[in-house]
Image (cartoon, rainbow, N blue to C red; front, side, top):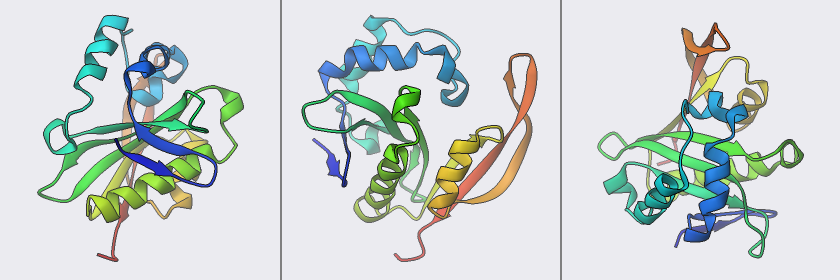
Length: 177
């Protein structure tokens, strides 16, 4: 099991007992915009996903990890590597923290720092990228804090509440490998 420990949080591989947490996250319409979700998920589908979550990142082309504050407490967020491309040594990054009371506590910062380290030094990736809605000020600040640079804007990319919003693409290149 992958476990990466920081000062106040750790990120770990998904476990079967994460079923209710993931079910709640996937069905939280308030975050569908940032997670590119458009339909609800059943417990059955989430259970099937968890049963297949043991697939290696090279096989699944993604890695979803739970963000936790303590070994005894359940997950409070998810952080992902997606579109893993081992030939070109890159992957996309996504993060979501459950509940406003868990945000603005540096949980996302610490989780992203751990994931960047894992991606660059364990997976030997050359670059990470993130697609961020230009309205998502918190995520723009978070990724910028870790050196992700805006490399472009996709105009009218995401339809939200009947309006088209732009999406920025950010990239972090590991020049130390």
